[in-house]
Amino acid sequence: MSLKRIPFLLIPVCMICAAGLFIACGKSSSGPKNAPTPSVLTAVASANEVALSWTRCPDEDFFSYTLYRSYVAGIAGDTLSAEKLGILTLPDVLSFNDYTLEQTTAYYALRTTNAAGLSVWSNEEVVVLGGYIVAWGENDDGQCDVSYPNNGFTAVAAGWDHSLGLRNDGSIAAWGGERIRSVRRPLAQQRFHRSRGGK
Image 1 (tube, rainbow, N blue to C red):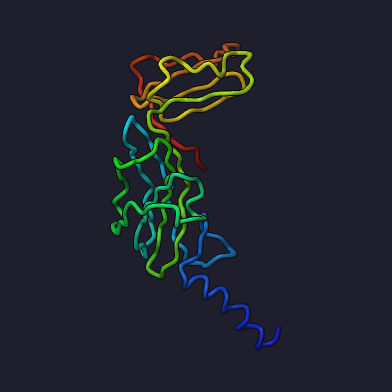
Image 2: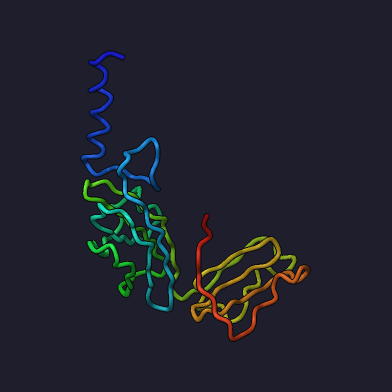
């Protein structure tokens, strides 16, 4: 490779980073080495509000979190269709409550930016106010017959022949096949919270 080709290869990369268009889901060997650590976003809907929280960015060069809301999926690819709910400059501010929804379904994403202006996106979360579940498909074991009352759900997991729903009060509803005791519920006084699997 001659020296004349090196500036040609480096200029587009520098222009992308300088324009703030670097988008990633985490640190990558093909991207800038100083990209911030992405946060994991969680959204829990109730009847008329959404409680958002995220993991803390541990980087020393943290600059800000920018929280976005849209009524269409794909915020990271189309920020013009999204509304900025806030720019938060303290690394320990890890939650936000959204009371200003105009539609029942909303999408959220968090952009973490460092002091160099590089940024990464969190996962995108979708919520449905009212928290009801719509189920369709094979129903041989009642796995689409949502438990009554069908409201107040904040998360759902659909299995092959059964389904589970987490309600906003922390209780779990289960319906569908009983062959391997998959819908036996825990004691009524136990309460659970939504979480994500990890390493």
